[in-house]
Image 1: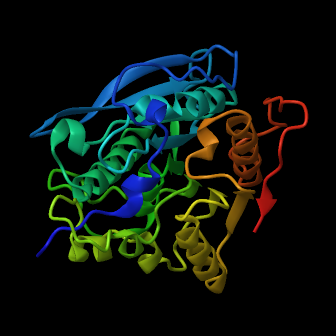
Image 2: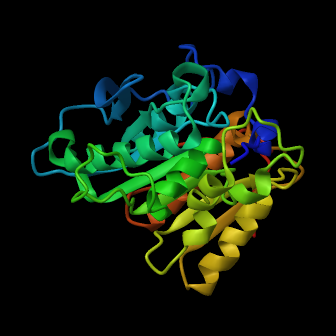
Length: 305
């Protein structure tokens, strides 16, 4: 079957967020001290994949199991680095959540296609749940999050049934208990380049299998979505919200007026969206107290849709 280029690449994140380098984002959401470590969660033919774990300050108490969030970076399944979500991970760790930014295979490094990205994301959630006790994590309070292609992967862990890794323990669920999605790609079939270039990544069959909106059901976990109103991917978000409400699911969309794709990576929107994320997780009982983020003076507001 002929390969096609998804328009997702046209809406990829800013260069600073796309490069698969080691530069840490300069935007910080918290000055609180958190501990960090790395662990290999999967060995693939293309190399090892790591989870970059940020934990609340201090040692875990044996009887205390904390919620956990696993973030997946954006970059059109082609570029990107786990460091994109270090600011959000550090912030949530400072608030008492174990926060993880995950590696997964991408085309620029591993020469892979999006089905492998989905496979790796599901493996990451399974690994975290399967090792929850050792990590001090409540296996029933695992959140999947991400931006753009990473938001797509987070949604796939909750919804897509295809592409389970052969070596995964299928008795461990890859379905998260909540979703935090920053301008995710949710309807892959609408993103094809109509020119039909042969250098693309996604076949039509694959697009159908990895379109989260096609698999929304009563089992879909609570979700919060963020979009700029100038982002063409927002149409997929609108579709998600409509379907979720038809099923009576909890689903929130917050929109930034006039903002393009990837708006949440920059100030002041990184603070604004992180605070709203905090409020959402608190409403689920995953966080306590008020958000500790101080918004800039005259910070713009998000609109509920």
